[in-house]
Length: 171
Image (cartoon, rainbow, N blue to C red; front, side, top):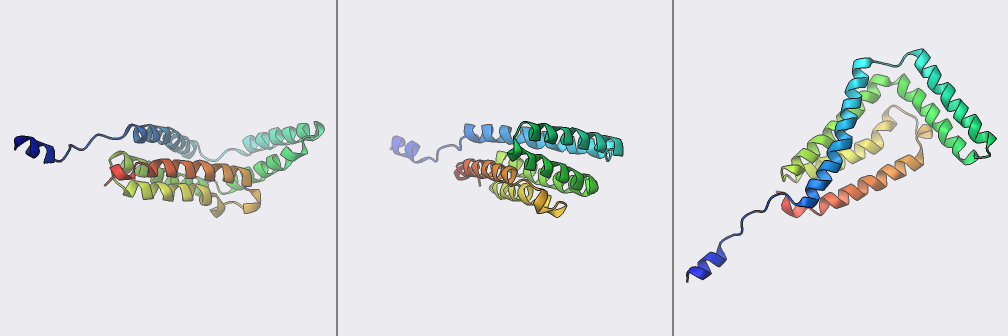
């Protein structure tokens, strides 16, 4: 009889799955690094006109070198990058604030999943959507590289899928 009673007891809840721990760490590192970079940029302020001119000169030199080597397919990418850089600098504080909020949502999502809360998964999805779409608030769609957006969407989808494999553990 005691064997039956022992068998019917609920098994103890196991700790955080190892896969979720790995995913959390893989998310904490870039999100934390980006938050620190944004805070540093806020502390330093908008780049000077000389620094912006130096960036344009470097990108123009890269574009000319690509043209000279017959690599025209990359020229458009760098021209887009230069135009996007100009738009980001024109909307410097707006871009930083949108990025800061986006990464905070991601950080809270990962922390909540780390603590076994399903709401964190939904916040993480929101973070991925904000990361993909937030740039369009302050930059023209013509200046945003579709290849970088596709790459980001694929990585986001992969992480969402991997996090979804741990939903059974979350409450």
